[in-house]
Image (cartoon, rainbow over all chains, first blue to last red):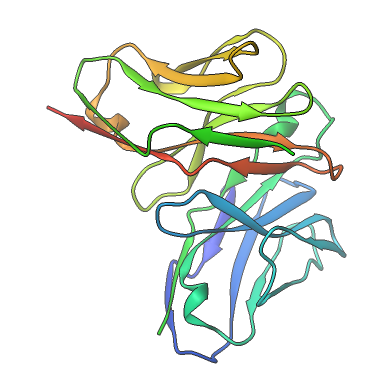
Length: 117
Length: 115
C-alpha cells in the first residue's frame, strides 16, 4: 500500500511553460485534494474532487486546472506558469466525511517543489 | 467561518524538556481539530485529531492535545522533547460547510530542539 504518490519531486519551469503534476492514491478514497504551500504559510486548497468526474474549486484555483477520470488519479495542470506559482504542491486523499472515525483524516503525498523562473 | 490561529511561529526547546505549541480556533459549531506534523522535505503526517469524543486526545510519538471549549484552544504538548521532534507543526480545523472534508490550516509553528 503506497498511499499517496506524487511526481515529479522537483521541477523548474520557465514563465509561460505548462506542466502536469501527477497524483495517485491506492487507498480507494473518493475524495482527493490539491494544496499549495508557500514559504512560512499553511496549506491552501487549490481544487478538490469528491469522486471520478466531479471536481470543484478551492480557495486559490486561478491558473490551475484539474481532471478526475479515475478514482486513483487526480492530476493538476498549470497552463501558463507564472513566478507566483512557485510553491510546494501537496496532493491528499480521504474517505467521504460521515463514514466513521477515520473519515476525517486526509493522507498527504510527499509533495512537488515547483520553481517558476 | 472556521479558522485556526497558531500563536507562535517558532518555538525552541532543549532536548528532554516539555513542548507546548499553542493553537486557538474559531468555529460556529463543534469543531473537528487536528494536528499535523511536517518533517523537512516530507509530506504531512497526522499526529492526532479531536472529533467531539474525549477532550484529551493522545497521538503518535508521545504527543497529546486538550480541547478546551471555554478557551477555544487546542494546544499540543509533549512531556519530553526529542531531537526527532524538530519539524513544522500545523493546527487544522475541518470545515464541513460545503458538505465535503475541507481542512483549514494554521500558518504553522516551527519547533527546534537543541541538545
